[in-house]
Amino acid sequence: MLLSIKFIIISLCFRINITLSFSSLIISSNNQRLSLTSSKKTLRFPPTHNKVDFSFNSYHRINNKQNKNQLISCNNLFFQSNIFADNVALLPSLGLNSFLFLFLRKKILKLLTPTGFYHSIVLGTLLYMTLGWKGWTCAVLYLFLGSFVTKVKFEEKKKLGIEEKREGRRGPENVWGSALTGLCVAFAARYVNASKKGLFILSFVASFATKLSDTFASEIGKAFGKTTYLITTMEKVPPGSEGAISLEGTIAALFGAFLIPCYAFFIDLISSTDIVIATFAAFLATFAESWIGASLQNKTKFMTNEVVNFFNTLIGAALAFVGGCIFH
Image (cartoon, rainbow, N blue to C red; front, side, top):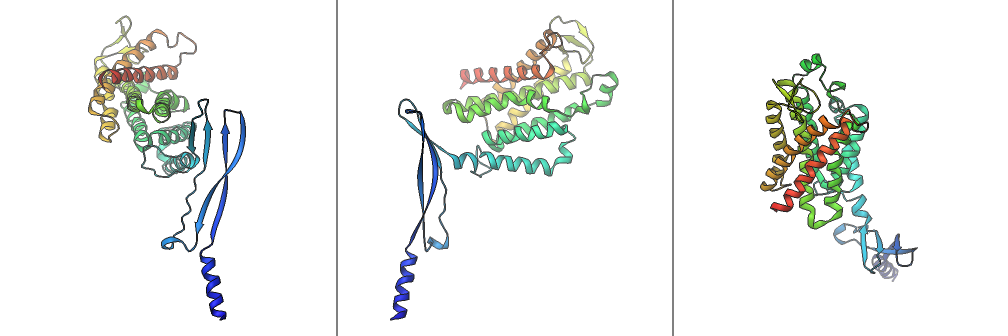
């Protein structure tokens, strides 16, 4: 009899449902007030297949003026952890970038200043969060190729006083001058308009292709350019002058503009048609950068090299966007 009672009690315990309540914040824009509600999750014992189903979902509900509710998953925004997804949550992105940068710190500090190093972690985190590993590797490819071409005949450039400062290492101003446009269109690709995602991704690729094209044009032109001309007047000027162009630098600019779009196509980020659009957008934007450099840089107080770089990438991204609208 006692054994039968024990068996009944144990059976009942195994059928108990344990309910956990988690508070989630609901923002109501209709009546401009905040209210708290609870979302319930149930655990059943004994667990199915010896595994406990403990999926946690917490949502923010936003009511707009048309009484349409949009659910935003906090779990996906902060904790979703598939690092090979098209976009990754904030915390996994931060963790992965911090680990990689710190693990490769000695090598990366040959390319970046200490301050530029930490700014690059922020940039890398945001890019991984918006476009995943594909967008992130495009930026990394620019960094390595740009740093490589900067070192070409570096000692000869140094003797002429036309070398990049800090032994070619990038600081925070270089990081954001080169990548701010790309980061903005990356956010647009994820959050703004899903129907235009392909165009924003094309603009993202073109922005980095533009900066790499400009770097190739400048560094190869300074290293191998035999005759350089000022783009605004076509007068002969010394290599390394702002706004100077050369045949060697122009060929290098076209080659540099092609590299990142080609890689982006290889990883299935853009189409074959987009390779042509991004390459020529970047190539044309490089000439625009030379004109801005000759006309405004060092003549207008705020028009620093980094600001010129930002406008350079912005022009390249805009040209690619327009080209995508025409040919898609």
